[in-house]
Image (cartoon, rainbow, N blue to C red; front, side):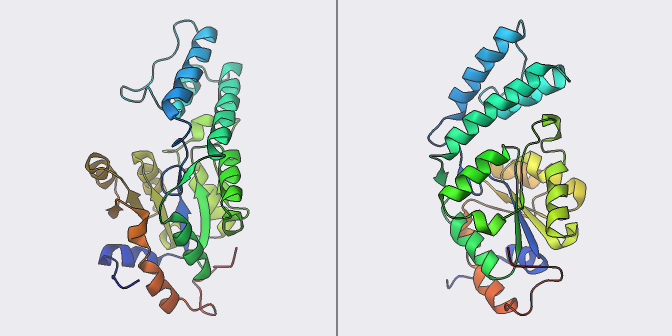
Length: 251
């Protein structure tokens, strides 16, 4: 690696001892080969058979199965239909994880950050079962051992932008918000990070999403995870294996 990372990115990683990764997007394309739109359509049909008239989701989110789950959880709190819908969505996510496509650069970044002594965690609105399935398949499980925090089956309303999974990640890694960094691709990621005071680095593959992430508080937004690989050169120089950030540990 010869290119230097932008100053804003270099500063984020230099100040961090822990990196929190959203899963679908920054780590892999979960629904790349198991389209989210088809999953959402099937779950919506199932929901409409149990809730007369169905449930409305946010405009523009009709193809997002997570948006459907959130809408049902909000409109029917405590109803068994919420738990069954979450269980069905988990099954679809696990199936998707079996053939999900890696996000270019993500694996190299994760391995490099671990080698440099960073604590790593997954903080996702997807099922932790799906994250474990994917990470095991591509050989990344050891870098997140004990630190995969996803949707709580019993309480899907705690999905981001609620910071519940980020708070759990900080607890299990022994990290503080100001020494951590969240990498995510949604406004919900940015809002969850902001609620805890965790710096947010956005990942967006198009200009419209880039603008949304900057508005949600991202310090910087990259269009490819490959753009982050140059920070590993500086990380290896600045964080020799005997001089890791306070509280850091190998995972």
